[in-house]
Picture (cartoon, rainbow, N blue to C red):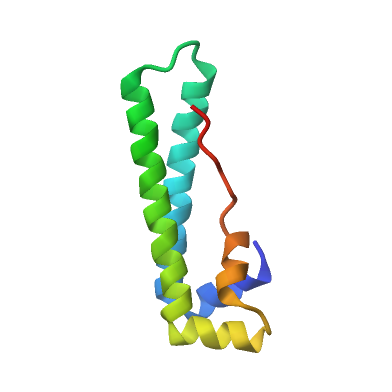
Length: 100
């Protein structure tokens, strides 16, 4: 875990909650995606479920980004650390692309 995450989560409990929600949504999406990719044929229902899970992750990540951008505590931490919280947030959750 990067210093950025541990400092933000120590200072802002809302950021911690949103980060966990985003990571959980990403993990669930990745697990379902892996199962679908390992099967020979991806059925429409499975594709629809993957799109739904991807959308849930995207929403959770967007809420996290918006919070980091609008939260006074998160902005203070960003200024103290001399970084741009909006740009550094991308480092907290891995980039994943859906290939179905």
